[in-house]
Length: 189
Image (cartoon, rainbow, N blue to C red; front, side, top):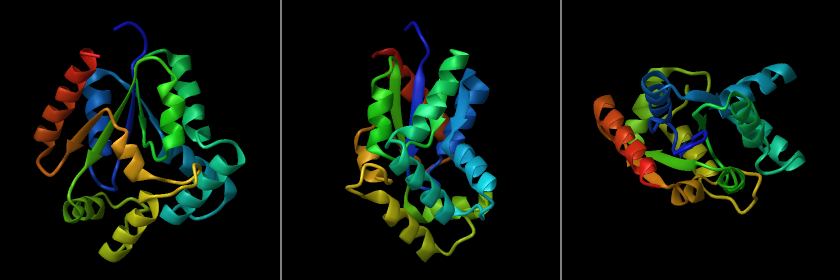
């Protein structure tokens, strides 16, 4: 395969998307571009608290104001300037997928796991958006799972459109092995 490979990662909260990113960047030399980091920068610039609600609010606002794929297009522009294999985390709308599908060598990976496992993982990572009850965790996810508005999160549709899905209920070693299987899948395309 010639050219820059772009891997978009979608999936549920706490499923292991960041662990896949770590593997791709540390073991395979991919560059990482993060929607979370992009939004955190924008939220801090606006002087509002960094939490899941403000992330959703600012992301939806940017998409409504500009386009459903605005954030991803901004990250892709940065990635293209480097010209190296890259991973863009975290794809949350079908419009973002559409924008990236127009680029050569784009592959969408979805990562999912059982809700209880995912909740325990987010509690351990202790980021500013993860200090919530299990009920809030499930409610947040449901809010982001379906939408008819192209500017809003629709994780269920993003997962459905994935080229490859990893169910990550096991160890990090198993996730790394499944990530390698995904990379082998890419080579056949």
